[in-house]
Image (cartoon, one colour):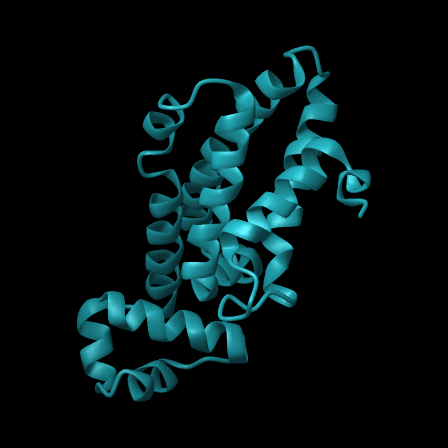
Length: 186
């Protein structure tokens, strides 16, 4: 099933979810369409499988891992580094989440949205602690989504096989996010 999900996420990013057929996915994994339907009765099931597995990976152990760090600075650095590591190691799945989730049937979309909301709440709580717990809710929401935007937009330019590692990139993002662009003056 994972092999089908991986191939499907690549195709969804290359061609788009709507434009990708079960035949395309079957060809990519060298299976018959019947073989695909054995595991996934519909293409929606494949999309949901991809997204729920990715969000489970994002949430897995996060709250426990955050307890290992003293201080909000360390926790925010960890969140950024972890987010980028998961994102760069699962780029197709992450991009599928960003661009194709809205095409899920309502019951599946609701389940994915609940996982995204939980991730948002965890990160927002850490950012609130980082900022001193007195940031108005609407501003905290904007700050949290701004951080997600910085981290998630890298797919348009970042090459994980290039000279800049995801650890170096996470340090840059953390410094810009926490200290502003001026922290990078030479």
